[in-house]
Figure 1 (cartoon, one colour):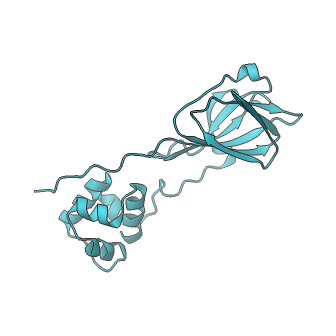
Figure 2 (cartoon, one colour; figure 1 turned 90 degrees about the vertical axis):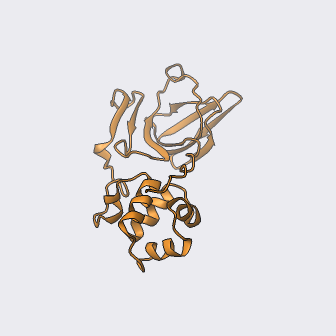
Figure 3 (spheres, helix red, strand yellow; figure 1 turned 45 degrees about the vertical axis):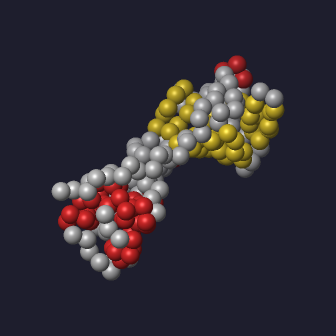
Length: 191
């Protein structure tokens, strides 16, 4: 339970103090639980699970859960849109089975013709890493050319579109981070 509780607390963006307050325990007691120096009562474990929005069994399981470590092999990516044909624009999802992600990673294979790629904008931030080929990333008032190994980080609210340039079709790792999740609401104590 020790490392799992710490991981779940951090995934919920809660400090030791905040989780302790919401679960109705002291910070020092919660610290001892996280370090394996104390074992919580069932009532305390239930309150911790309720605050962390997980089943109480997740706090006590000895198995590493798939959602804590997710490996996606190159051939296991999920087609998101477009035809997975080299040179044709399409997207492949990465870690699509993982719920509650703070980031959305995917592979993008941009079109060569910018008419196939309309300007898009959305909340959050975006990171592009050019894995293969060359890419032109266009903003309304600026165009950036990226070579293999180059990257760019930008505010996704800025309209943007991309296209593959050069002889080799481009492959781009894209990671989108939406606005930060709300902090967990206080949970009332169990009777």
